[in-house]
Image (cartoon, rainbow, N blue to C red):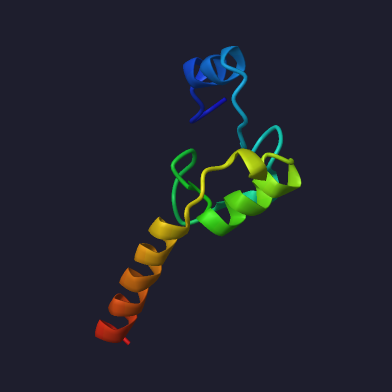
Length: 84
């Protein structure tokens, strides 16, 4: 697969890790920026990844992100105030 790491996929399989990837199991939770050249144009965000994890029933095994989300929200609000 272009842009994919066979070594990383092998580790995920060997360690029985849950994963989301655009090609085999979670396409709707990623998007491509057509202004950039593949494979360096694939994106997602935390909301989409959490949605995909919930859909695949892996949400309960995801660590709680609330503290970092609060920090991210504070940064976003500060940036918006500085650059309206």
